[in-house]
Image (cartoon, rainbow, N blue to C red; front, top):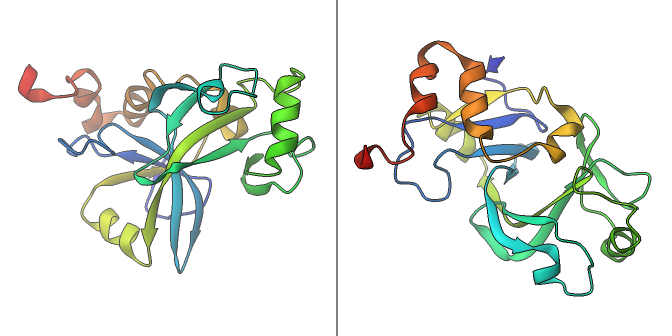
Length: 186
């Protein structure tokens, strides 16, 4: 369902016409916060070559780390669907939570009580100051859709997620679903 209303918990799908933008080309962003002061989101389909163990060796797990966006890429963020296990979490929407007590989270991961379907880690985030995202919407940089996966989006494979979203939109977007990422290489 395409909408023009911005709301936390919604997905921002990069328009196929965003070519050459390394951060956002074929990105799907979960909008984690949206208010009159600005917005915050995490790119959920851009895995990096790192695991949580690579960055924090005392975490005994190989959960992938994702490129959350170009802002503060030296900071680690996480979303999850287990607020009953991770204290101090902030609800985004539909059973998806942001952050919480990281020491408890590490301990639960090491005990095997948190799986990759429960949590997703990001280096950096995507941020917009007041009215910036609305301006990008007017220039057709993003397609807004409701998150039909709700909290199961955390365990969703990132490999073809943008393509799947474009195919679900149908219509004029279908032709883009099989286009090469860089049309100059076609």
